[in-house]
Amino acid sequence: MSQDHHHHGRDHPHGDGHGHPHDHGKGLSDSALLWAVVINLGLTAAQIAGGLAADSVALVADGVHNLSDALALVLAFGARKLAARPATPAMSFGWSRAEIVAAFVNYLALIAVSVWLMVEAVGRLTDPPPVAGGLVMALAALALVVDLGTAWLTARLAKESVNIRAAWLHNLADAAVSVAVLIGGALILAFGWRIADPILTILISVVILWHIRGDTGPILRMLMLGAPAGIDDPTLRRDVLAVAGVTGLHHLHVWQIDEKRRSAEMHVVIADDADPYATRLAVKLVLHDRHDIAHSTIEIETRTSGCADPVAGEGH
Image (tube, rainbow, N blue to C red):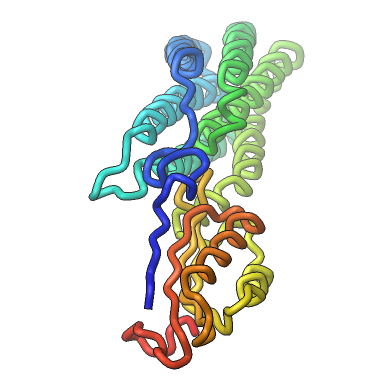
């Protein structure tokens, strides 16, 4: 039998097979994240102080949400730095999955904040306190400008990284909160509708939870070593079995090392007269060219040799 861990440079067009495969954009990208953190922390202080002065739960909620924005960006920035570290014997795939973990933590925090806001707002529905609508509108307008500015600073990175995208969506959700708070302040000023403040807070939280429900699934899938969403298992099996010399396939596992890299392992049964090296190379090329799997570990077997796996029948 033969096993190939396939850790050569040609295996990873973006790297050496162990380290993080994509550029982390030093300079402008990191500066943009740091500026986004600074302006969000400043806004948080202003909104929470203003919300307490105006007795607006929606404004305090917006301030807490902005704090979670800042923390999300800090977490995203730290994970980005960690992901750039080289692989070690203890972390042979590198640290790139730190960005996936950070994204998941950010989404969990956003869920927790949204639920907390709903609970606070429900408590105020029966007896909404008087709210200083003018102050609420002024700070909500400032928050909207900051939120949109932060979204602009991180927009380019959000296209490249699920980690930054989580923080970016976090920020866009807060922009929606700011718009709703503005509307609430206007309703309070124009009509004295104090109940608008808690109602809008509840609606904001529901919208945020609805928005992120689809984003957490793919991240959880990666953390649980699920097959990448784009992998069609029957087609992959059919393509491998179509390789000349291959007569069987079992113990097939496909997962994502990180956001950019897919990995696969399998036992391939070949004909007794087939060249094991040529057959294995042909299978690797099929995995790479047709299924975008650059990292593969393939164990070659024959009908005569059988499977050396001690767990008989698993995955066959």
